[in-house]
Image 1 (cartoon, rainbow, N blue to C red):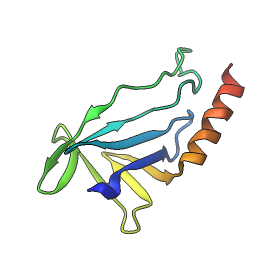
Image 2 (cartoon, one colour):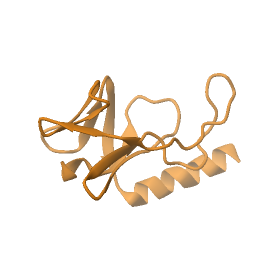
Image 3 (cartoon, rainbow, N blue to C red):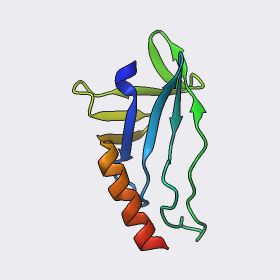
Image 4 (cartoon, rainbow, N blue to C red):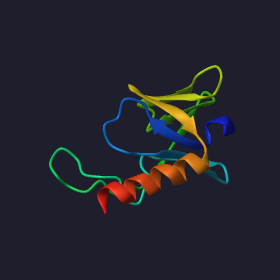
Amino acid sequence: MDNHIGYWQPIDSKALKVAEISKDGENYSLNRNILKKSGVNLLGREIKPSKPTLLQINDDKLSIMGLEPIALSFDNNELFVGNNKFKRITKQQVDAIQFKAEEEFD
């Protein structure tokens, strides 16, 4: 399951967001948005970083509270969380996205 760890950018998202799956000891967590500032939502409210969600391990698979399954593509470059799809990105890409977000929404 360590192949889930990393940075993930939502595919087909209108907002700038970056998700992260991390591991602390034996626990995995999902943070759906780690960017400090990434724009405004449809209601005009600022999109802020989210808090991590502890993931469950069932039958050697990760899920959110056992309800939303988390899966990887065969090449480990796409992540599926429920109906949402993400692509793997590097730390350098995260930094570039954060820089763009700060420029656009400062």
